[in-house]
Length: 203
Image (cartoon, rainbow, N blue to C red; front, side, top):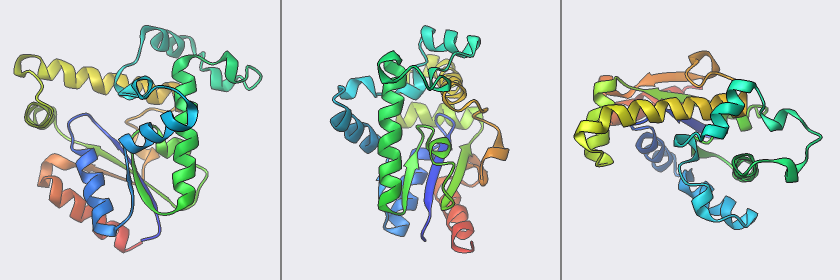
């Protein structure tokens, strides 16, 4: 399997676990927090600046989205004119391009599908699931408080959508932007992995 797989996922859908199992099945690198560590090391920023940026759309970020003021659209501003959010995104983007150059791998989140859109060896996946499934899974896996789990799940989805829209100009949940979209709650995590693998093996 000589492809780079990117996984965009709803919170609680199991996208990270699916990505890790795919990487293990093919014996290729898996990148999630590894991107953060490498980007922090290469950029000089603290890792804390990269943590959960997809899930934490700040007020200034939301304002920029509403005003259509993504600074990446202004190429004359230069690196010094960028906000911290944008510098972090740029550092992550550089690392994502580097790991893609190194060979087949699985990359979870971080707008990797958009960052690598000009490559012809990319398979972009979108993993979703019912809200009930995601709430239950988040309580079990991420230890979310039961009473606030639903609110947190929906809030994180909204933040990821805003983050993706800000940096790519595209809707995060537009399945036409992906090569394959799957619901992990229908057959479970392992069945979803098997389905993806069948698809990849027949390309």
